[in-house]
Length: 317
Image (cartoon, rainbow, N blue to C red; front, side, top):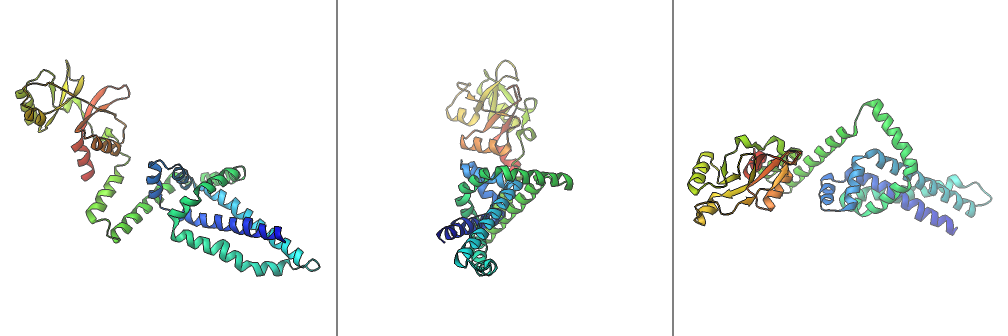
């Protein structure tokens, strides 16, 4: 009788609650939260985000887990009925008596809990769920292959589903933030534009060297001031020998404050690859207070520059 109780409570009921609740939690979890936690270095959040982006793996794991929990629950009930009433076939009656307990504590209660607090609970059960993903991989892989076959037959790609779900989740977060008074209309629009530019690269915004106002390294202050007025830029790119050899930049304002009549020191020109993400470059330039940066090709040659003000303007408009 003790073994039947242990199998029913610990293995059957607990596993049923675990997989039923986690299934609801994964469908309700905010992907933006997982992305932010993953970018902060949370290993579990990164793996959970991978599962949400690969729903066939997640579904296969929960299916195997729920079937295992149901089998153990049924086995424990049959074992208990045979021990309690050995001379009678009472399995059906005992199963009916335990059905409300299994339904409430193995299905209804955990689903309600994960529905109300998906982000916290999914993160808490994340390590154990990843363990089950590895344990059930041999069986789940068969279900995953079958799901892939259905995707090929139907013609629906996982990428479309992920992008649609991510956009809906993001819009829901914005709406909730606005309703709670955390976001104004202007802040919401700015955040949307920022996410819209998240996949853009410097290729779309940088200025080629042929269109950049540059000064020679031996230029005097009058020449620099004249070039700055023509280009309406206070930060000037400095080159040596030829325009393709950009070596850094100088600030006209700092030269005036220090009463410099010639270039005494050139600030090193930071460089980004042309395929670098626009938002990443914006964050890095803001953190390091960089007014301008060079844009290079795959061979490391500077082919243009990008100004911090241009990055901000591209997001604001």
